[in-house]
Image (cartoon, rainbow, N blue to C red; front, side, top):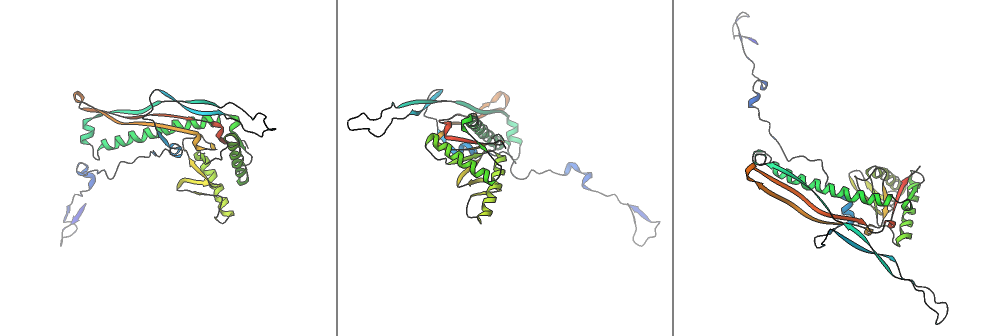
Length: 294
């Protein structure tokens, strides 16, 4: 750039260098602002819906949950002094197998001392969240596979509209009650079915002036349809809708938590986070899967 002197003519000019931030990149800091951002959701919706039972007092590699397979019998007496109805009372067991889940990491001391925000806290949080997601996925996958794997436990969706869903849900509820003499108290759906059912609920609300049919909103997975609580399980395979009695499937857990060991010769720390889990369905007949064959 060339600038004229004050009071001078065009021939009297001087050169002025222009200084900008691009000339001093070594002096410009790059601050790290706020907490470490994570896209993990460790809420465990399926496990939360049925409740996690404490397994810390249960010894052994496996354990069994007793279930009645045949009840006694009662009936009208044909005549006085004639024999009453009689049938054996039978109890069988559903075996639960313990599994160990967890993750480990070897961390350099420099990673702990030099990072800001400290990587240590973020690492510990990430280990816990990944463990939560892993155990949720394992239990949810086993539950969905057991229920949907039996043709007798399925109800066909005749039409993918309001009338079709209402019919299928009531057929599913009737089927579950006929099998275990308990009306369903929960509905589990995959992410794509949450979107479908949300639209159906919106139609119901519009037809009833918002006074009935269910509750659903875009900013939350919680809701219900026909007053049946609905739980969204993002890890379910697409197209999954299961209606049933939530007490007929169980999840057990004993968290070990965080373990750590200093490694002096490496100037490092080895850490691990994990726990024991066991899960199973006591009676798959207490559930019905709605399948879309249309």
